[in-house]
Image (cartoon, rainbow, N blue to C red; front, side, top):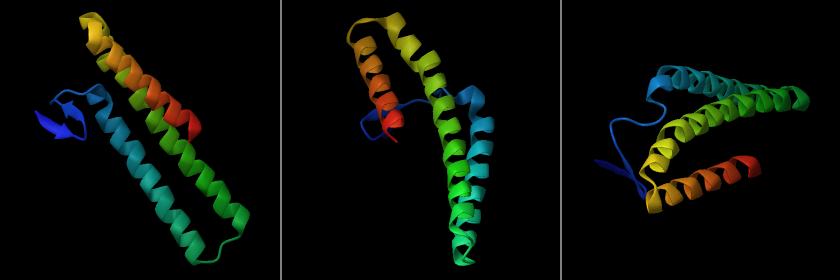
Length: 104
């Protein structure tokens, strides 16, 4: 098992089935951010840049929501089946992630 921060990761994560789609969305968002950078370098009108920032933000939010949905359906559901402290920890973890998304 590899360590990622305080969380152990395994070869199967909740988003495994959607990985290709998520990577594709992230590449699209990356392209949008690069486009925004070019717009700023080219002194593009502020509102046009802000419009593109909004689009890139929505693209990342879409990825975040997909990851959250997959996490709930896989990781949290599995922990709920196990019950006890594991379930409680996963629910707290998911709640904290949702709170971070809402605040962003």
